[in-house]
Amino acid sequence: MKKIFFRFGYIFIYMFAFSWLCTAQGEGEKYFRENNPAEAIPLLEEDVKNQTVSSDTYNYLGLAYFQTGDNEKAVDAFDRGMKNGSAGRKKLLFNKGNVLFAMENYAGAESCFSLALTADPAYNAALLNRANARLNLKKYSDAAEDYRAYIAAVPDDPQSDAIRTLIGYLMQEIENQKLEAERLAEEDRLMEEENKRIQEEIARQEAEQAAAEAQRLAEEQERRRKLLEDVANSLQQTDTTNMTAGAEAVLDYEYESELE
Image (tube, rainbow, N blue to C red; front, side, top):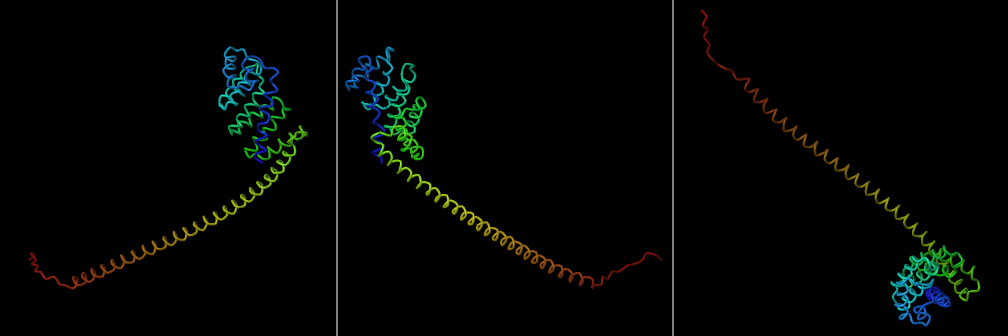
């Protein structure tokens, strides 16, 4: 499935590159048409610097950088082209998307293809490549929708049978994901219930321990109270005995009245 996907992803870069040849102008574009991107780049950059650009200069420049393996500069060339009013934004977005796809920046590629489709809803090449980007992003439902739309728009495409097969795989994968999501949801529910049960059991045990500790402390306090009471009673009895013994003693003393 991945081989089919990659083949879909790049077939249009060169098709569109060579569809523009009839409008090319300048030495830089001439070198690009002759499949000499390394020689074309400095001349195309000179055209940009001198502001002597055609509607395809930035496209050729970006593609030339891409062909020489400098993807970052290719993206920059397409971005610069989109700031230039004479360049075709649709083609720039499409080719930028393809370069980002090659860089495995599938989210960026999807965005570029979507913008190209906004500019031209009938841009079927962008539709197919957006489907490929969405496939890599695991957006299977969106990818299947794009593939169906492409087959409907281009029913005679030589790759149509392979795309239909791919749609079948995607639908199976979507169903598998649905079942897996349901399984995980049920697993989460059971885990949540078990966690709730465990927490309730822990709370019950803690409450029992707290009650037992409170009972123990109460009993210990009562034991100490009784002990103190017993000691106090013991001391009180001793003092009473002493007091009784003292009361039984007779005090003798002489008293002489001074009265006559």
